Image (cartoon, rainbow, N blue to C red; front, side, top):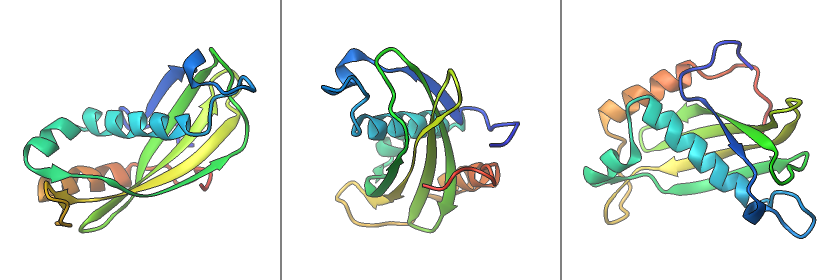
Length: 149
């Protein structure tokens, strides 16, 4: 990972009891919620809040997800989620993630989500230029040596 991270590119959270499965590990679906939190906080820190985009009639639904799981996280463990923009196109943006155990920096999972820009009726549209500018700046600050999903 890069020594200097863009503001908002890393969040930490504590695994809640309700997020664990019968084996006492964070359920695999929780990583998607954690990735969403990382994505929304990255955008918020860059001045692009989802709520503000949606007020303009612009939606960013998830079109594709890929996750690789490597280690488990247990109840009450602190987990770090590193998020960055890995690709920006005219109508899509791809975010990448690495979830690590805060105590020992072990990689728990990696992933990507591809979002497609639509209007409020679900019709694909171009990402607004002001949003594209922010996304491209975030992509330029992305780590170059992150683990692959």
